[in-house]
Length: 85
Length: 134
Image (cartoon, rainbow over all chains, first blue to last red; front, side, top):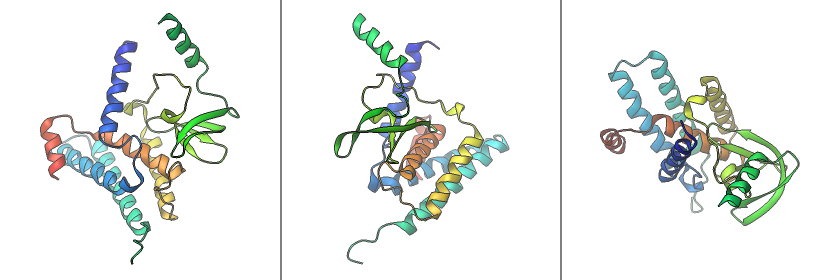
């Protein structure tokens, strides 16, 4: 791969992550971004299972999903309470 | 153009700055300066750890090369990813809050979500539609 191809690929990655709001997640958007990524992993895991992908790949996706779910629950539990409550 | 290319090569050759150097970076308060303690690779990009403990992603550091080096997802081993997951869960378990900008939980969770997105992002329009509908 040439230097300019790599540069284009890096720019592409930057663009993809920026569009997904994942280069610098806004402080009030962590829960939403975790949810977005979690949904995406769920779709991929479903596909991996449908296509009989390797057990290792399925396990890896399932483990990631578990981590995201756990993080989501912990963040919900630690979320700042609204001032009125 | 020649001068600019030569200047870029010079910057790239001396990048990243050494431990103990003063660096300038963009924060929510504008541009700030601080002492660099360590440069550390995350799952996707490099983080600059400051003496005061803040973690600044490389793309917010001034004076670096125009072209920043990011890791390819395939370069991240399962062990490295699992270690990152362990740290994230430990930080969440003790009640740390990622909504504190430039702190380690914020920095690490940012990179973990970016890494996971790049690894599992939908490649076809059908997959994109399915993800959106889930």
